[in-house]
Image: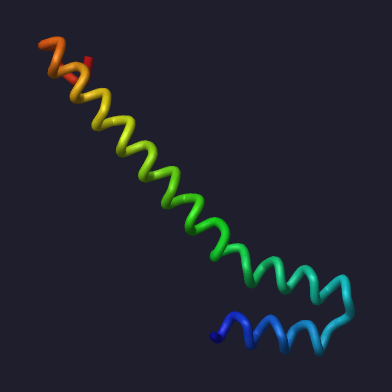
Length: 63
């Protein structure tokens, strides 16, 4: 709730351009966080898949 309140206060206290910049800066963690989590999950899934494939071929997963 605090980021929304801060964004509202910033938009009311600043002009349109400055308010938009503050809004973007206030919202970016909610956009970047899920994207980073999705990237990490995809990377972990890919690494696990590669390890399973290497094990099935009887190879070392590190090369």
